[in-house]
Image (cartoon, rainbow, N blue to C red; front, top):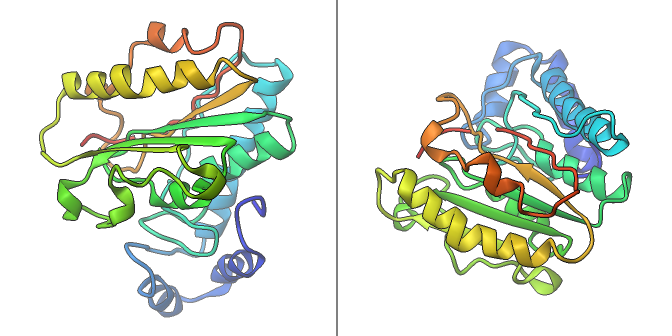
Length: 242
């Protein structure tokens, strides 16, 4: 977990195991949309460990691909704080682990949760080895997390400029055709371009939560096969509809 977490934050999370209900509630209220339980730290660690174990199995060839269906979710979590129901950013931890421990050169993360995964974006906004693509409800910033960084001009910083792509929906009620347009005309051309050099791991983060995966947001499997023939892909599902 330390791959994408500060030591101070890890120690804070571990301390929640010994907190009573009043202390947990007080700590939760210092964050945005966070609700802690004495088992939150253990569950978040198990979720992150599940992602890492799946990555190892795919990388070793034991599995051709895999699905990590884990809770609590992670894409709102930052390096040093909780946010939006998320304690640890499992995808970020997995991406760093794949890069540093498994020898993967580049990672593509595709996130179609109804909310923008600001935690994931901030963790990789200066990293050219990780391309983050997010399509999410925005409504001119009126929809949570209410950040200018969730809008399309946020394209990364420094060496990571150009490796962050946001497709913010300013209207509501988006349908399957809208998602297909975003995937086919924005995501796929970029994925084709970047997958031509080196090896790319692939993590899909649709999840934020309670409503489950929406079949309207599904990209046909045959489309995914064209990214880089012969490579192994890792699908890490975390999803809900816009």
